[in-house]
Amino acid sequence: MKFLNKKEQVLDTLLTPHGEKLLADGLFKPEYYAFFDDNVLYEKQYDSGTSESQNNIEPRIQEDTPQLETQVVFSDRNIYRSKTGDAPTVLEEVAQDIDTIIDLTKQNSRFERHFYGPRHPLGTTEKFTSNAPAWSVSLLRGQIDSHADHELNDTEPTLAIAQLDVTLNYNIDVISDPTFVSDTQLAITFPNGEILDVEPEIILAQIKELNTEFTKDNFEIEVFEVTEETVPGGHSLGPKDVEVLRPLKFIRQPSLVQNDILLDEDEIVSIARTPTPDNVEYYFDIRVDGQIDERLICSSVAENEKQGRYIDIDFECEDTTNIALVDIYSTAASSKPCPDLEDPCEDNPGTVY
Image (tube, rainbow, N blue to C red; front, side):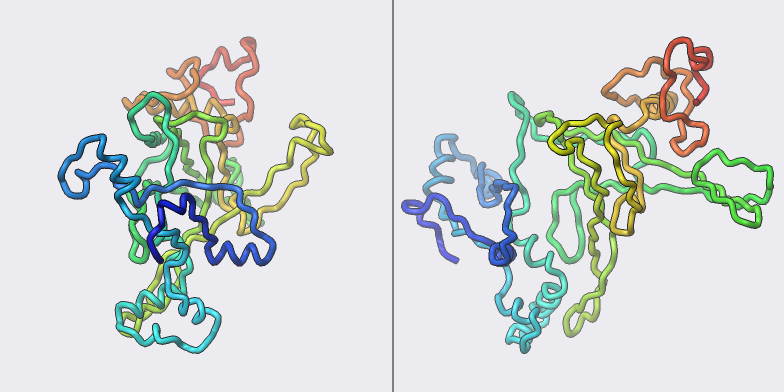
């Protein structure tokens, strides 16, 4: 590690140990990049409490402040040797506090590679605004139990990732009446005639990113299974349970382009795939944007308005005064809205079809 010679070096690029391995295996195919300014202090008042003129900010950052060369390794190289099964190193003989860090590092690769480097990539703001990008999350169905501005845990530095906790409750009843007809698709009938009736809850949320550019793909959804893993905690601390996130994959949808020909959705021949425990669909049904029935949205908006909560949605509901609350799991719910003005729905706006 040494200082960057600004007179001779303009750009300093290095591969991480993981990048070197991928390059050696012929698998190094970078697709994305990000810029970070974690090492830049734009306004001096946030450090020393003193102000400075605007003309002095640029030379202080560009010329007067030393910059370190790129750092891609944030742990001792001997730790990597220990992982390969080599003989214990001198690092494993050091003081108790350091030993605790070593044990956590050897067991949890996320701890060493991701959380000592830059953590806050630069984003894009909307033109002609001085406001920073912000999140707007409104729940039309469900309730936020708790929230936090940052992610906090025992083994990783604080991350500025908002946390929203929502709990869903499923009411389950065992029905012995043979004439009982469930109004949900989740009900299970057993050979002895008993019915396991399930009354589910759903989350219906409107998520917006404010003060930034609106494009076709504004969001990416990632789903993780939260598990726990026991790792050593040092000579005196004993084993410790740490939170581990296991990523789940969405089942890949068939492409609309077949043999270099763009097809309509009804022309695509798709092969149904059974979800596995590694797939999101094994646990959840997640629908976004146009995949959500507008009647479900409008009925949820109407229910919120009755309780004095106004939610601004991106399309107009024709009439929210007499809309019944739609259950997406109901056997009576149709996947299509009322087709035209002559449909019986017109005479019974409060009826769900």
